[in-house]
Length: 278
Image (cartoon, rainbow, N blue to C red; front, side, top):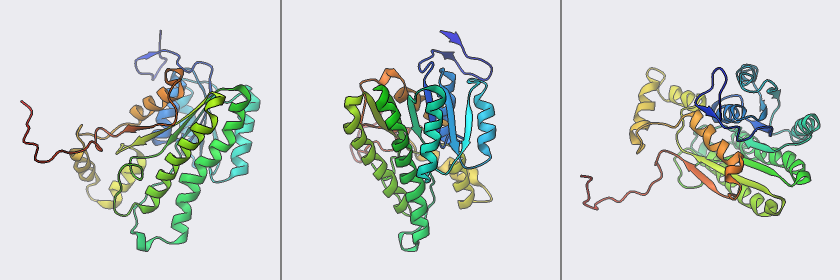
C-alpha cells in the first residue's frame, strides 16, 4: 500500500493499476468523481465531455494520472464516439473500463414536453450510453475482459417524481440495457452494472436548486437533505468510490445489478408500527 500523491485522500491500493478507462460525462459531477477515483487507483483515464470544463478536469486528473486526457465529443454522435474509443484502444492496446455518466436532468410537466425536449433526453441519457457501450464492448470482447458501469438513477427504476417523465423513462431504459448487456456478454468476462443514485450534491443539482429558488438555493438543498434518512446528500467522491468498486476486480462476480446509492431514501417506510428506537 502506498500513499496517494498530492491532492489524494487516504491510501492508494492500485485496484485498477494499469487499466485503461474511458468516462463519459467525466468532466464534472459523478463522472468526474469516478474519473478521480480510477486515476488515483492507477488507471489511465480519458474523459469525454462537451464543454471547456473538460480542460480543467483533465488538469486535475493529471495529479494522479499523468496521461489523463480530455476529448470533446457529443455522446449522441455514434461515429464520433466509436472513433474516440478506437483511438484510445490503439494508443494503449486495450480498453478495460467504461464508465458512462453523461446525462441531463430537468423537470417539465408531461403535457408541456415537446419533441425537442424528449429528443434531448433520448439522445444524451439513453443513446449516449448506448453509443458508449457499443464503442467499448468490441475492444473488451477481443481481450475477454471488461467492466462497464452505467449511471442510471433511483428515479425511473424504483421511484418517480412529478415533472420527471422524460428523465425517468431514459433512466429506466438504462437499467434494462444494463441487464441485457450483462446477460449477453457474461461469457466474455465482461461485467455490466448500473449505479442508481438518489440525491447527490453535483453542479447539475445545484443549478436545479438555483432555478427553484434563485434567492436562497441553499434552502432547497437543506430541505432535500432533511428528507433523506442519512440527513445529507451524497458526494461525487462517494459516487466515485462506488464506480471504482464496480470497475475493479473486487466486483469480479457482480454483473447485471443496479447498486442503489441514495442514503436510504428509497427504504420502505413502516407507518404506524408503534416502534420507537430506545
